[in-house]
Image (cartoon, rainbow, N blue to C red):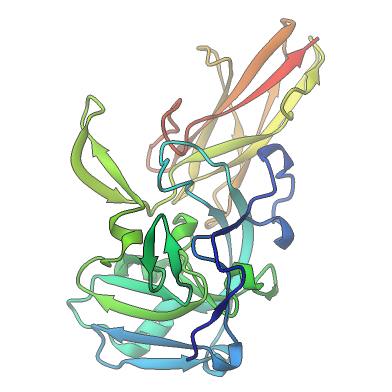
Length: 332
């Protein structure tokens, strides 16, 4: 396969919507987040292929036509940027909720017959260049092999339409429930291995320090894979004026890898907490929460939302990419 042209051949991003603008359950394609470390690759589908090799008994190479002949499924999933790898404790709030269409990776790997020693799937894109002063031959990430059986896709469509170049055309990896950096765009190779990938995007960047009970780093790290519990308030919008003594409907979205079990809303971080009504978890999509609040005191205040995942983790107040979302309003 010919090496793809990059246009632009530099880091490229698009994250147009703020939390209060996330009013649609399924985000429009033009409003989805786009973040490309090395530029936007523009491979030709007629020249595209996907190699599957490494610790498999039957290595294979799929052409575009091979992929199109495979059974396709659709999965609605939150798609979130984890933020800058240089500032992992700063919330980015770059999120969208989209419908991915594609082929289940588990079906493709079953045909290749993975060896018992295989533990990880390395995924390689066709983008290349320089990031933070380091020359990159290809964008390479990894994920645990046991995650593949869930709902990992080789996606060729978003919201029912073919992928756009900036979204990974002609095909990309999609790992629902993992941060977007793990869903490699312009996918060309999958390699099954018994260890994690050795490139800079799995060793130098996108690893969080593990801290002890006092909050000090232990020296060990954990990959930035699973999406931590998070929520945003969509309405009221920042600096919106609310009438005192009248009921206001607060609503927003909450999500986590594995789903959200609860969302709490309070004012200015005080002890009085309102437990929100929340939709049941539906696969990997975000869940809508709603709260009725009747402000009694006039003046400026902040509304806080805190999500709790199905496994009991909750959003921290600050100092993390999933820190609680706060919206300032004015009660008159």
